[in-house]
Length: 580
Image 1 (cartoon, rainbow, N blue to C red):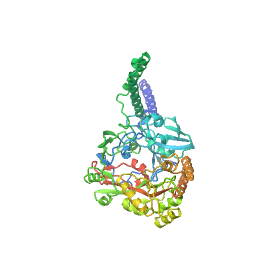
Image 2 (spheres, rainbow, N blue to C red):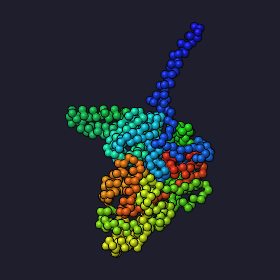
Image 3 (spheres, rainbow, N blue to C red):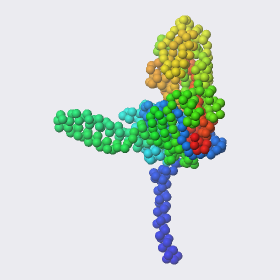
Image 4 (cartoon, one colour):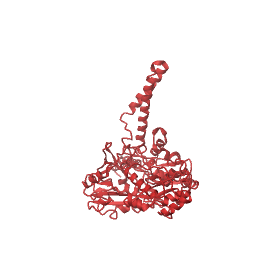
């Protein structure tokens, strides 16, 4: 080899070594380059590929188009933008900013990995979760085990005022195993954990932003304390020193808090959109998050396809419909009273589908007549469920047999709705010692629809002599939430009304069981116990209606029913020509 060739080789060698070292460094898990690349999806036997996980022509015949602002309407403004603070008045709008650790499937079971890519109960009081890499918050920070741990501790800290804190009462601690692995430690066996973490506590929020909230709270408290001590500063040297120390802390925290925005008014999640403009009571405007990880993870970096979304606050459904017809909004939730007027309109695609909500009548089992099962049976058989659905819901609801809707994974398919039989009701009343009927005090909501339902129910019960109280539970996710709320002594909606010992034992067993099949059987049995005891009167499971202008593309209704939340967040719509 000539001297010149040797010289070139020696000069290139350090460069090659440096290049290799840089390549290795950029591939390390903690490097910014590695974090910027969202992980691709890997499906396993435990977490199989869902049938709706497709974006080809079997999903939609044409390719997505970028552009335009999607406009919709809501009866209420979003409220506070931290989902753990109340009030939250529009959960649909909240989904623009926040995703969830896990999503529920078409049967409302938490089976869809999202921010979390896998989980495993290592024992009944321990669950280990693997987090997906490369997921960035809209403030530039990254989601990892430390961020998740901080958020859970923030929720559990009473000083932060999270209404969702009670949902995590069973969590003993959260450990960081490595950068993308957390270990949840529970105080007792907790089979309902996944259902809870697929709900509000599982909306990832930037730890950096939450720390800013804590700083704002502490700064406000320090200013208040300093003002209080200032009044006593002239009463002696000791009091003056206390004031000066408090004022110095207040000044320091106020300086640190400059420019910090509360998550209540400036949301910082991992979602597909970021806040553009908020006009409380009028509209919420969001813009496309260019760093959204999901589209990149499936090879569709243009997702989300809209430039932004605008949610107008329009309380009156008739005004919403007028705006839809005028092309001023692209979609709306249609009331049942409006359905006949819009269902055949060629300008819209209108979809009717099951909603996971139940309506019925609830009993106070502590009252003297209700203690007698014959009285409860008499009330239940006095309700003409078909007539109520036809007269108050325009025929758009499903007759209920018990709590969980027929498409919920814990619905007992062997239970049949209680039949309407007023003659049986009268015989049962007579047997119970009330041949002339009786009256029970109760209440319903004061909204127009609630009043209509109440009047219809009262008219039916007047034939056998009753007044009763309404029952309604919206968004039935994890089965423990409703079961515990209504039928466990510590439930938030129990108020001592129900003390069914068999039901209580099953509720506690279902809450603790971590095996899904065993847990399902427990809730089947719970529904059977409540049903046979006529614990309450379940009348219908609800139905929802949504209308879209035909300019909106990419909504596959059958796939939505299969995947529900998982489908809705992974399959984004677009405008036919890139504009409304």
